[in-house]
Image (cartoon, rainbow, N blue to C red; front, side, top):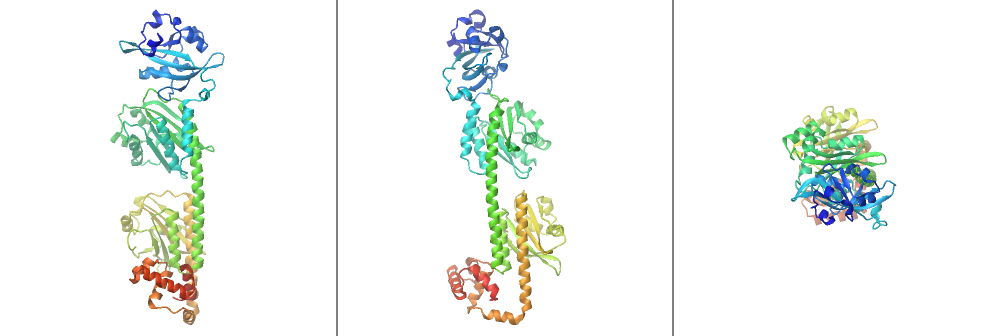
Length: 575
């Protein structure tokens, strides 16, 4: 009869017309609701319970710990899996606890009762005691979730030390172990700035997750998803074992709901299982890890939060370490940039060269597309362009802006950094044609102030949205302060030079080494910070010819490099 049960053709009259006790294996019979209707003595002895206590109990209340099955991880009682799928479930390893407290390990094969190859509603399960086989096995204390945690942890150790790469590694590993739609969200230093990484294992609809995230973005809520926000705010896992797409709408905000109604991405009757757990580190929630799984015979349960939480916390720790590493590297680079700018100021008296160095560091360290420096003309209270970098136009127009209106006038009047990311604000700029042509979508300005006197403004531009954190703003402020010192120093030097009189200037110029007209022109451009190729284009000579003249100039002036050349030329007044 055991062979009949294993083939799924156990006759329905087994529980009533045959004596189960004559069977050599443990057998339990369940009805269509998962309730025990009969069990033989072998099953009662195996479970350590009396028959009258076993009959009438429900499978879901048996407190069996499901470890694994032939078909992969199983999170529910095998009887429930059969009732939901109407397919046999075999080779399920479970740990059961006898009434005396001892654990017993059981292999369960469960099949639906069949008549004429059609299920009748009940389930017959055969149980085999395998305690002696795995008494010394690792499986005695481990569940299927433990093995998933181990596998993902191994993959995590190999991930690149970058937050987004870590999230991608984790979701891809989880998708292979338990296919579904895995979504990881990570808050930035600004809580409204949230990265979302999706790995989709739903092969029936590969665009499902992408469409969902796009819906968030198009609805204006791409910083987060409503379900993730709920878990982040509560700090508690969210488990929805079975929900239709229609009912899922109730968890979304009005904007997203309206968009998904107009652009349906799944049938309203589609069933999903959802579990989302917080990613926690050092007592703080920094994001979420979630699984959106189409309905199956292995539905999501509360037990899934245990192993998912372990993975989420490991992921959070790895992400935090990556962020700390990134921050440390970024700080070192910015300190080196400030040192480089300070060196340029001390070595070169050419203001244009110094401002060019500052703008190069602004665009490199702050990751902005373009930047410029405007200087204040006190005669008419206007701002004039002095230096720029990163603009697509071959020549940025020499515009002049009133210093007391619009942007950057607001930054100057408030004497603090101003940033704008709303496109509507750009329409108020006098340079709106420039913004339209360059495609700028974000803007920032910091006033340049030295010894309490306003000198101008440092502006940054970006062609996508900017979400600056406090360190970003502080570094922009620091570069603005350095630029202010350079401008003030250059202004003072210019005034001192004028005060010396023309005679002193003539004497200083007399010390200049003898140079040809071409060499003098190349020297002037080199001091301005132009490269050999740029100089060649200006004087209409070949690149190699300019290199030859530069070597001659270095020999005549007795200096070893272009930086010393610029310093001596400014100090001695050669130009």
